Amino acid sequence: MRTYLGKVLDKSLIDEKGFTASVREDGFDVDDAVLGIALRDEQRYYPEDYAAYEELAAMDATAPALDAEDKPKYIPSPTFAQKMLRADEVIQDRYDELKNYALRFKKLKSRISKKFDSINQGRLHFVKLSVAGKTLKLYLNMDINTTDPKFHCKDMSDKKTYVTVPVLLRIKSGRAVRYAKILIDQCAASHGLVENPKFEEVDAIATVEQFLYGEDEGGEE
Image 1: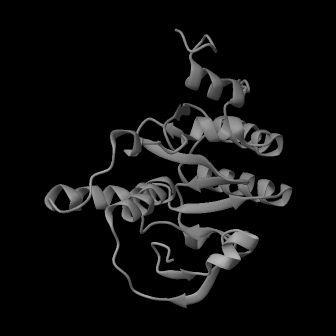
Image 2 (image 1 turned 180 degrees about the vertical axis):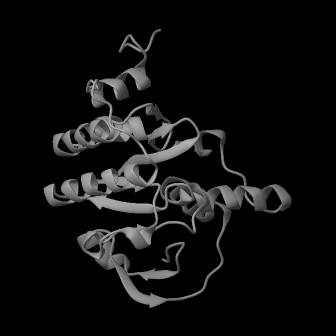
């Protein structure tokens, strides 16, 4: 017996220990039933590759069709707001601290989108915040060459999404939070931003919840 990947199975070992495959691989003919199993695995674990298969299948009448119940269901990537609300308390606290630190300059506004919390002054992109796993990311509108090498910032200017905020600082520690504040001040100075003495701090997580759920957390406006 062979799997759809071509691995030879020892039936006696399967009966004795479960699914046990040898290291030897052989080529073999794949029928529709076996290919269907492979495709279901692919749609579950590699949805992008499966989408490419569907495009080819549409052009190839000989490609086996899956049942309607086996058709992949589109699962969108979590948004910034969803990831932030799922993040641990440490990340949420750092986000709240840095958002307020950046917003304390005059005429700055925060706008949450699918991927970022962007803080801008009119058309001037000041900073962006995002989250990935256990890392908070800060993107700043400044020249990478003006940053202290010990901060280990990354130049993102070759990416279209970050062309206006090309300096990336990954924040995984309290020290990185201090570095972030230095960079925010440096970025503000380079754009002539003035601190607002009347600034009142916001509840960053509450604004994320309001963005995601609306005024009523049940989802109704």
